[in-house]
Image (cartoon, rainbow, N blue to C red; front, side):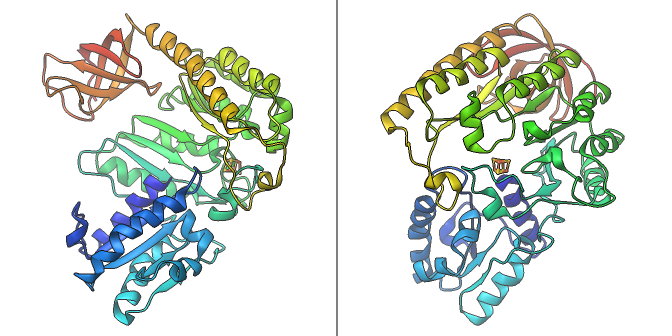
Length: 431
Ligand code: SF4
């Protein structure tokens, strides 16, 4: 979501005739967009400010702005802590950033704006796709009402708010007209889209409306909360041809006791039930997940249940982390802390097991034909192209005929690597 927000910031300033530069010494404006979901975001921010603020000695007109989760948490205090910082803007103030920058420039005084609003500002700003992009992100909702015990998101993004479906459809239509083939719908918990907005359609219905937009070939979404994965949404995977057979479904832990302390609202059995339902109607669906190891109170037996879940579900990939405290969350007050050495060991075992599972899944693709959406030249060299299958697997491939970014190609998989596949074009499916 932060990547999408950064795209929106680019859009806002491009409209004001700013141009992107990779040279911070010649910049008139530096915007740092922060995220505090992972560990030590403040340290990264302070180190970046330590590099950028001294640039103002040579360029006093330089304005430096900080937004995102850390800005939301610190508010005005960030200006006190970092003399030379000009603008602090919260997660609901993204659309006001150009005005805040202009005010700081004019008054030569720092400004800060971090109040939560009834309707988060910035949701209606389009993230500007790069000229050669085939995929674009579209925010459909912001905030979260779940308050999982370890998570800072509800405190820094605010309560759940869904955009109007008409505005979303209009944005996707514009993206399709601009040549975008694939949209990724974003929100902290997309499956609860529309539930708390009176008269709004459900998330599955929204997917159905996007399916009708000419030019859009693929639809993806993230992130889903397992407890809100409705039968209607599961059925959409079978009913909607453009909805990719790929789902990121955060598990976090395989032990019911740990899930309860995390406040996740599901059990390992109910999670598996949803996975089985999904696989009954879309057997080829690829699943990925998030795992936290070493949550307070997690015993070795609890941890082994996480490994059991990895084997039972067979994820394509996992995003796994050692638990780390987020001050201000409920879990920050939990005792029964798991020793860091133990966390490290569990993380290594978790990732080693997942590497085996991921490798087996990639190896099983060899010999199959996949439809690949071409995203650009491969990193391996100019003679190869790169793209993704509907299951979001990366395929690097050679093509004897001319192809362009955005083409959909039929590719035969001939080899599996650790994180990607190698293939060759067998026929162009057109696009
Ligand atoms: S559902 Fe996701 S975003 Fe919401 S509190 Fe839980 S982990 Fe955080």
